[in-house]
Length: 193
Image (cartoon, rainbow, N blue to C red; front, side, top):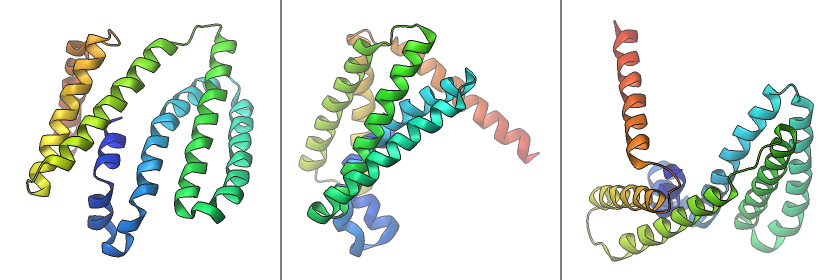
């Protein structure tokens, strides 16, 4: 989730570092795609659940529907908006794949999706994104300092909001992150020996 926020806020810098100044003009497309990946990441989880339920053909159908929509939207949007149109088409496709996969997970497993928490999480993310953009706009630090200030601020704001809106227990989230980091470090130490 934070990758999407950071890619959105620092799209121009990321493109400059990775590809040079000739590609910085694509920063709007990267921003649009970074938002799309937030939707797609949840859709991937849903599709994994559907496959685990023994219905991989259903996942294939969802992906084909998404592919068909993507082709149609690209034909419509690219001539008018160029690379940004392609990014919009892909993001809209990701949203459709999320909606379809969520519907099938919900109906097949007969569970109620946590839509209220999703809305709160997305709202927290958008507010965090807005504040991150403001910080980026008004800070006059070196890019590395700016990155760390914005990154730490965004994490703090987002964690505060999801805790305040009772989406997640922040202490549990932080402890889980430490466990993941510890296991990765421990695994890395063992594999080096």
